[in-house]
Image (tube, rainbow, N blue to C red):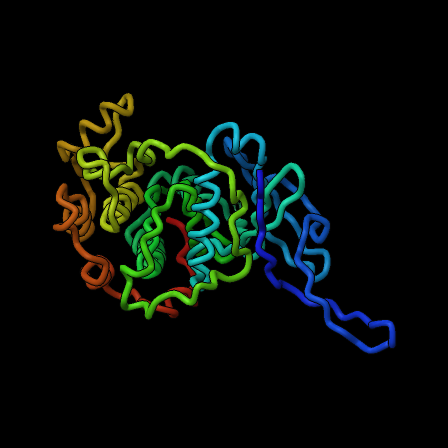
Length: 329
Ligand code: ADE
């Protein structure tokens, strides 16, 4: 198989030529440029390790994927989707950024932003529930990140509190784009078209590795949108369904649709069978009810969500990412 990596110029090194004249050589980062440390997480196809750039002493999270295992389990497509999606999403503080990709004989390496605070789910479990102010702040950061990825033609398709990481400042960073849907660039005229350059780490890590088309992807049961279950089709509004589930979960301490098994969870979703616990704030209830709508075309669009009274007081845009996170309550 071929695991091509288009030569991405990521750093220069000053050297001298035969005549003693200084020349700057372009060098690509590789495994040996990092000192690997603690394990941050383990998935079925990857391990995430903390690693420090030996030159600039900056710490990253490096996702290490075993090539043989990925090929054997027919996951090549998902690895490429994750890389392609992340390469479109390099300019937003709320999304884990991909800095470099490289490989050795055994593994592929994705060098990512380190999010030291762990998963939002862990913090929610520790707290039980979040109060309205915390839910407003974390909800706003997640929504701002969704707005950005949708503007770049990426649908996440598996948004859930496990895939929302927190950094040192307790700001959110969305991760895990392996199951994203990448929309055709031509369907985004507001964007002015692509440049054809998808930035550092461009190229297909598994070019030439043919794999069968996977059956249509279904995300995590509790956050799956009804249109995915009935039409097997996800759209941007599917992420907003998941966002409604997350808002509900932050305030209620559990997702709205939960049952003993996946099939029963799906039955509840398509029947819109959920209830609000006593004490659920009325203004948040109004917003969640406008998101958990079976017809995706009738779900509140992002600009209306931002203008909803639940988000009153939120400073949208760059200011949201300069704000101090509220203490968890
Ligand atoms: N676990 C998985 N991805 C991570 C990241 N980017 N930072 C910290 N822990 C992680």
